[in-house]
Amino acid sequence: MKVTYDNDIKTEVLNDKKIVILGYGSQGYAHSNNLKDSDFDVTVGLRQGSGSFEKLRRSNMPGAAIEEALQDADLVMMLLPDEHQPTVYEQYVKPNLKAGASLGFAHGFNVHFEQINPRDDINVFMVAPKGPGHTVRSTYTEGSGVPCLVAIHQDVTGDTKQQAYAYASAIGGGRAGIIETTFKEETETDLFGEQAVLCGGTAALVQAGFETLVEAGYAPEMAYFECLHELKLIVDLMYEGGINTMRYSISNTAEYGDLTRGNRLVTKDTKAAMKDILQEIQNGQFAKEYVDDCRNDYQTLLQLRGAHAQHPIETVGEQLRGMMPWIKKKPLVDQTIN
Ligand code: NAD
Ligand code: MG
Ligand code: MG
Image (tube, rainbow, N blue to C red; front, side, top):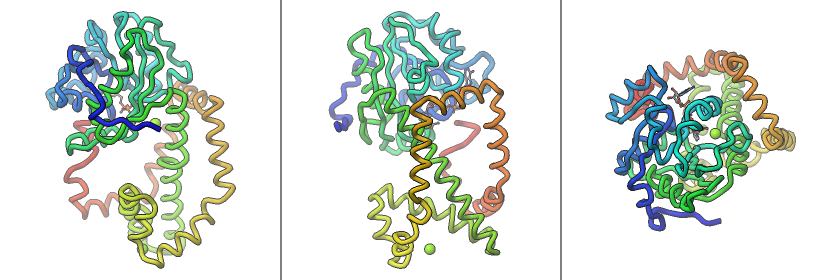
């Protein structure tokens, strides 16, 4: 598989283009600020009266109401929540985007599951950073970046691929590596990763470990340090040198426990569940369930989010983090800014 870096990317293709970023959330904040710092012409499009206009002012970022921002736009990046993109596309983008312009996505969901059927006379591409928006910004300012996936869905002007690579490079992806894929492959692997391992799997594992210790009578503070706080230190080692480097760094005792106990937790049944989860993604069942919940005022999402926010691991964690002020010195997330 080919991995492309900045050296092999020409970004001039974006030089005279008016780039419009729709949304100023996790990814919108990062893309627009990275593009601006890479000297490209960028405007953020927001809903009339959006609270984010104040955030734009604070970071000195040009912005306008969506309709106005779309006038003369050459490249529009859809960085709204996936479930709101179809309406915004129909209402604003479809009638206003000029022919031959480019429409970009950071996730393949809407195009792959046909929630959006883009007009035939525009380019459609994807640049999907493989990391949270807050990290796309923090790594860029540190001189590194987050790896990106690039895909082309429609190419009417013949240079969509160059535009996509230039865009990925301008937000810092070319420092870490850019891989070409398809909307289908990105969508399915992204959903699987976040459900089975990164978010769903990890959060459930951390909570279950915490609960096991607390139920056995150990102090919640100890359980928090063992099952959540230390996870970052372990993941940092994996990030730097894979699972091997993590195992090199931990004690032989820890390594023996790891190698003999890990697969008692992640068993054949766990893998069977992973396969089911993957199948629900591939056959569209997950997408339908999610879209239905959004239309149902996020009943399931809000109920579960509320319940999990009350978990004792959150309360004890808040207290303990209060005693570690360095954690918040250079925060990835500052909700007043991004
Ligand atoms: P977000 O939820 O952080 O922010 C979206 C922004 O859109 C907010 O500023 C919000 O005010 C605005 N918005 C919400 N509803 C709107 C509406 N109806 N009309 C206009 N504006 C509206 O979104 P995000 O997490 O940055 O996700 C954006 C895209 O990036 C999605 O396609 C997502 O899958 C993709 N993505 C996100 C991440 C991530 O780290 N969050 C990672 C990779 C890809
Ligand atoms: Mg995702
Ligand atoms: Mg230990």
